Image 1 (cartoon, rainbow, N blue to C red):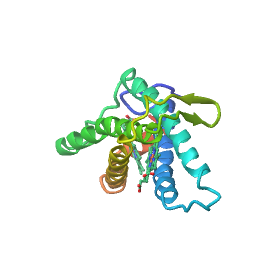
Image 2: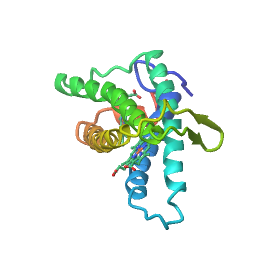
Image 3: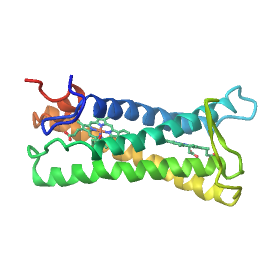
Length: 183
Ligand code: HEM
Ligand code: HEM
């Protein structure tokens, strides 16, 4: 089992980061939309945002680790792509990192604008940068726009990956799912 990435494909660590984070990001989008519509009398009024924030902070940590791992590994070769596809896929792959960072930081700023820290599953707490009530609405608007943008780009990225696999018979989906060939 290959742990690191090679020029032929993604190793175990990158694949786990990719699929677990993709699943969590889609789930966080659904949870976010659902929780902002809850009434004060819902039993989930406090627990749903608290889950959203806790998972969000874990995702922020995972993003930093994943970025470090990406830089410490060779990038699997994409020379089976047409020049246009290669440029587009590189922009999308690298673009995900700053977009996700901005999404998570805006979420952190909404949550801590009242000066209170974020309790992450009761395990540790992330301090607030200080009370700044005026920031809550701006950060909220930015967070919503970025969340839709990330999901839109992820949908196009997934459609491109499936098209490349099914129509062009390319190898990128297989090497992200089962890794590079071992022999
Ligand atoms: C993968 C990352 C994330 C995704 C996809 C995501 C998605 C969303 C969505 C779709 C909403 C609903 C927006 C609306 O319709 O008003 C939302 C709200 C919210 N998110 Fe996130 N979020 C993420 C990360 C975070 C993080 C890291 C935090 C904090 C640490 C956070 C805190 C919040 C808060 C406090 C709200 C409620 C905002 C309000 O009351 O208007 N989110 N999120
Ligand atoms: C929110 C969801 C997603 C995000 C943020 C995301 C992000 C990324 C990133 C950043 C890469 C570059 C490798 C890396 O740095 O780890 C990548 C590669 C890849 N993704 Fe996603 N992805 C998501 C969902 C999906 C889905 C749903 C599919 C397929 C149905 C998919 C298929 C692929 C494939 C096949 C590659 C490898 C491309 C290559 O051969 O270089 N991704 N993704």
